Structure formats: structure tokens, C-alpha cells
Length: 333
Ligand code: PCA
Image 1 (cartoon, rainbow, N blue to C red):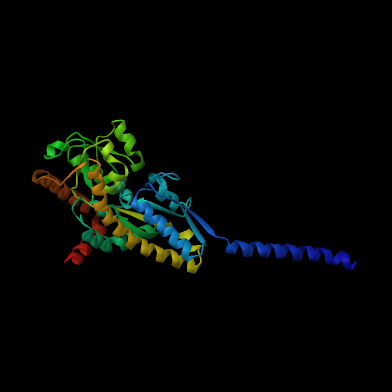
Image 2: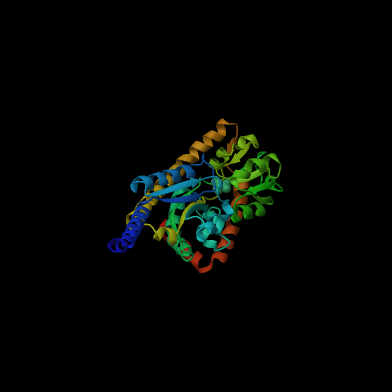
């Protein structure tokens, strides 16, 4: 009798014990996050992100382990933002201006000549960061950090001196602004993601492109063209976003570690970008690309296109856009 009575108790005690042990273990097990990014391993953005994930690993003693899947290998660029929003992945990188169709404020960094150097780009970021973060927060996305690409220019097979030289070129573009600029210059734009650039050139789909010295060097532009015009049109930013839901599941200490590493990654990334500009220009030259700046005639045309695009953007971006422009101009003074 006593034995019969004790056994079930013993069994359930063991079960509870095992259950608690499992729970305890789960609470301590490392969290693993998959992080899709659109650009390749040679890109300084990817290097910076890897450093960010190492910093998080170190600071949390391995509690949060973020695994980077670069070059669109896990999720293509076009799907990354919505994948984070839907919780398919907790964190990811996208170029901010890709969200322009949702709200024009996301492409404020791709308006030609609005902020075409690092100091102005930084001021513009300070003037726009909060409003952009708030827009993302409405979708339960948290902005962790943003880092600019080097200034955008124009790659061509032939030398460009006159505005007419751009006409009818099949021009590779990557966001609405680069597409619109190509259009206004009389070229024929086609959107192509970075991993697909070499194929787009080798199959003749495009013969020119708008991008940075960095991406030209990363994709070995010298294999398919000869000229880079360092026009310094704008500095588009990549941003790292995390789903608020995934973020809130982390404990307080881990959350702080992520925020600290993100702040460092932003500071480091801006420096890397600036350094990369000169280094990539050198790589282009060493590999036979002729690097020039716009002739006065071309400059005039690009400025005219810039003025048109600034007006178009301001119209589209309405009150929020005006708020950013006012804050930007005020900080510039
Ligand atoms: N490289 C990316 C975005 C801007 C840049 O410099 C691209 O060309 O798609």
C-alpha cells in the first residue's frame, strides 16, 4: 500500500523535476538569429555587420548569436524588409531608399546634390533619423543603425563629356532615384541587384551603371567597362532593422548589448565608408578604369536634373519631407 501510493508521487516529482530542468536549460540556451543581407562579403558594409555580430556575441558571452547570410543568399533584397516585418527572420539589412514606395522620406538620402559629401550626409541623417525610425516603428521595426555608401557616380563604356553622351544608354539602376536620374538624362534604366551586375553586363542587358566606387570595385567593373565619372550625386544608406517582437524577447542586458554594438557599428561604418571611397577609386584606377569628374556641360545637366528631382521629392514627401529639410538646413547653418 505505501509503495503503491508513493510511486505515482515519485513519478510526478521526477516529471516536474525534469520539466524544470528543461525550462532552466531553455532559459540559458543561446538565442540564434539569422540575418539576411543583400551585398557580398567583399563589401565594407558586410564586414561592418560581421564585426557588429562579433561584438554582440562577445558582450553577451554567446547568448545572442547572429548568423549573417550575405549576398542575398538566404532572402533576396526585395524580400528582406517584409521578412523581418513578418517575423520570418528577426533582423536584416536593406538599402533605405528601397522603401521609397512606402514613404518618400526613406529616399531623402538619394536626392541628387541634396547631401553629396560625408559632412552633409551626416547632417541630413541627424535631421531625418527620428522621423524615419518612427515610420519603421509603426511597422514594429526597430532601426539599429545606418551607414552610407560612398558617393554615387556613373560608369560607362565610352567617355562621357556631353549630356548627350548619356542618351539611350542601357543604364543599371538600383532604386527609384537612380532610375529617375537615368530617365531624365535620356538613358534607359533597368533595376539590377548587385549580385546580378556581372551577368547583366556580360549578357548585354546593360552597358552603364550608377553606383559607388565601392560597388564598382567589388563587382570588378573593369571586366565590362572603362570609365567612371565620380559625379558625387548622393550617399545612399543601408540600414539594419530588427523586429520589435524578436528584440523584446531578449533580456534587458542582451538588448543593451545589441544597442551598444549598433551604436559602435554606425560610428565605425561611417569611417569605413569614407576610407573606402579613396581606396576603391585607387583600385578602379589600378585596374585600368579612367576616373574623371563631370565636365562643366555635364555638371550643368546633372545639377538641372538634381533640381527637378529635389522638387519632385519635396512634392511627394509633403509635410514630413519639409520637416526634414527644415531641420537639415537649420543644422547646416
Ligand atoms: N552600391 C549599391 C547601392 C549603392 C551602392 O553604392 C548598389 O549599387 O546597388
